[in-house]
Image 1 (cartoon, rainbow over the protein chains, first blue to last red):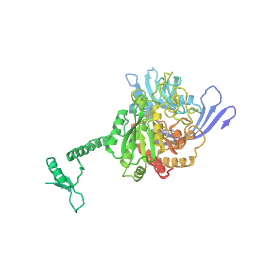
Image 2 (cartoon, chains in turn yellow, red):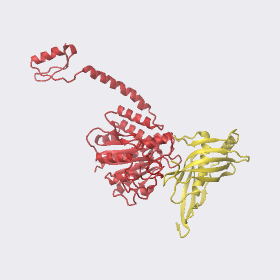
Image 3 (cartoon, chains in turn purple, cyan):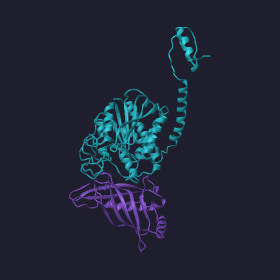
Image 4 (cartoon, one colour):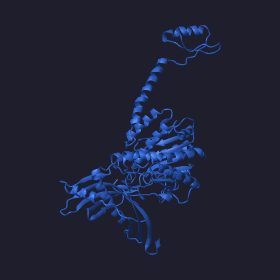
Length: 178
Length: 371
């Protein structure tokens, strides 16, 4: 839908599939508005879920408590590795990266981009005195149209009951060092 | 004491005789003095026996190797090149290895030739691994090459195809890039050629072909992942294939295998106008993706490059089509982004296995529609 002087609006009907429970699907509809204009701005998104997402409280708490109880800050690199392997213990960090980079992708998408998380290059836990877990991520995003790999650094806060927040992010200019 | 290998039957018919070394002179003199003409069929029988024993021992050893080759894991360039030799050793009357050139860093560019004879049979060209980071592509290539060799004489379709056509299969089309993904940067895409006047290395080998070269579907910036190169066919890896296909003169299909996105594509990428054969290619693609999905439910989209994925110029299949190769297809294998280029090795065999019927569909169609 072309909205004169405003932008392009897309009406979508989607089926959400739970990556960890393939038979669990939820229908949803969404409206995405890409604004016209030279200043890049994130598209406006409205989503309506027609069903409920699976409850993950138990798994969230297990992961949360495990990290909280570590003596040293969690550090990991190359998730997945070259062979596509993710050690089971690091899977939650991988999933957290997906969610957080989803935010980055939303904030940086246009009608001519298709961004995906390619790899978590490095993740380092940042010690906090409060109840939140904080991770400093360096992720590599793959942009399909240009085929570029864009390194992106982000700070991610997470708590089982309070959800995910990207508090800061910084990306290198296009074309990573060759 | 003479050992007749073919006994005397009636006058005027030849006999074959094995003669021991000590008796050789005496037999020759006897035959000559009685005007019996003779010719030597085998100079040294023992030598032949020794050779035969050797070749009988060899396949047993090598066969153990190719049957223990781990198709379910990703391999290094050296491992892949060694496996190629094993494949040839195992199927010497069907498979041979030819070198079509050298990469920028002087690595050999090898092509496996599957042929049952004939001088320039119509041929099918397959390539995997043109983009270095797409590891699932050469991994699928290895499994597929092995499958072709195994199924000749077993599967009716493969047998009829190879009885009248040759298959040329380049497994690692960009060996420099591939080695770089193992040693330095897993997400490297391009070749490793040095760009004059730039610190950035490499050219996108799938933007370097002379078909719509230099358009908006590629970049003029050496630092870009879709850098087209200074001129068409500047890359040795590309030029080698161009020279081979044009020199061969009878290539009827080019199938180039990439990842990821789960798509089956045909020309054009450099312009929006459909190719004259659009309908036929579209129907064939539709059938192929349907047969692909039959195995594990993997969904592929299909269509022309420009309609389905994005504008891309200087691509392999566009060049092939514009040079008379009607059946030019490009596969984008698994997945759709969850793992992307870092597809888990556990998915290698399923990916190769589901792609096989789609490849067969195309090859059978090529066979049944000569032009």
